[in-house]
Length: 324
Image 1 (cartoon, rainbow, N blue to C red):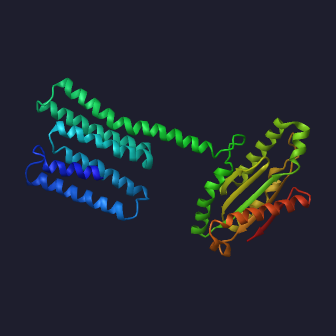
Image 2 (tube, one colour):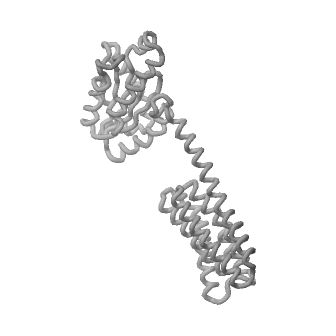
Image 3 (cartoon, helix red, strand yellow):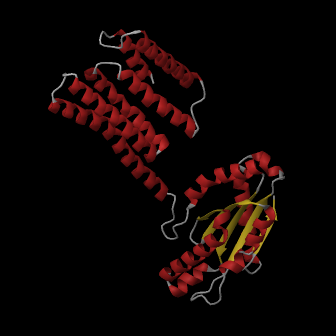
């Protein structure tokens, strides 16, 4: 924004800049808006909503284009390189669709400037084409390559949250999702439930059938668990044969789902039949636990783990559920 304001001021001082009271007044108006935006960004809250960033994008693109088009084409083409800044903003904050819209607008402005330079006799046809290609390549290449790099980084980040065996979230992915689920439950006054599930006597499965068959059992249990609870929250594999589900919804409905976990995951007709034990903690909307903030999830996890071991001590193949 400071660069845009500098361009506006330099154009007002340039002998090749806008002439006449109307164009000069317009550039001054844009300059005032740019300075106001700088003050807001320095001292006000940073934009954190998409519409605010989109507004900044539109103001930057339209303001820049309308100002530089008042200059002679040869100077205006230099100003188009600033389109790369708003293009990079699209990459990191708005996404590829708005980036494409920005690039279309920016390149239309560049083509118009090149055509104007040719019509006014400032450049020959080949010079105009070369200038348009250079300006278009520079303003488009930076955000496009940034978008490609950012997409690769984001994909790596997503993969780091995925368990390679079950393709569900791992412990890291679960931790990143918990805060959003906690905020959703608190904001909508819904119940928050954490369920810890462990396959009973899984070591004997590996010892008797081998690790490949053990992995197949884990995948089967993971698929059934995700199918049973996945629509109500996030399900993750957090250890060898251990799973954690974090759910948000109506208390009665979630409690019914949780109490059905052991029966849903167990099927005597499976090639390698297994049972599971589960411990679950429910935080009702009116619970005092909400006052402790999201940090209480650590206490909830330890409590659910204790309940899961209680279920195992009582013979396994059951779910123990308590409220906090």
